[in-house]
Image 1 (cartoon, rainbow, N blue to C red):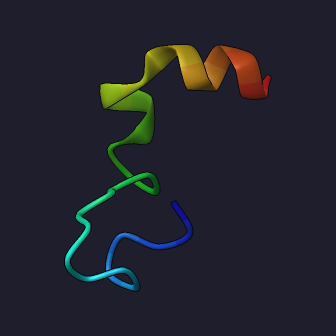
Image 2 (spheres, helix red, strand yellow):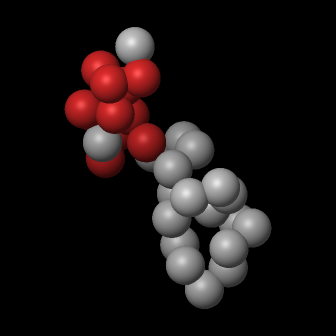
Length: 30
């Protein structure tokens, strides 16, 4: 979970669609 384009075969978009797919992550980060 470092970069969505860095991994390649593992599409883990945790940069932009993070607050959209994981709204709880924003609350935990706050």
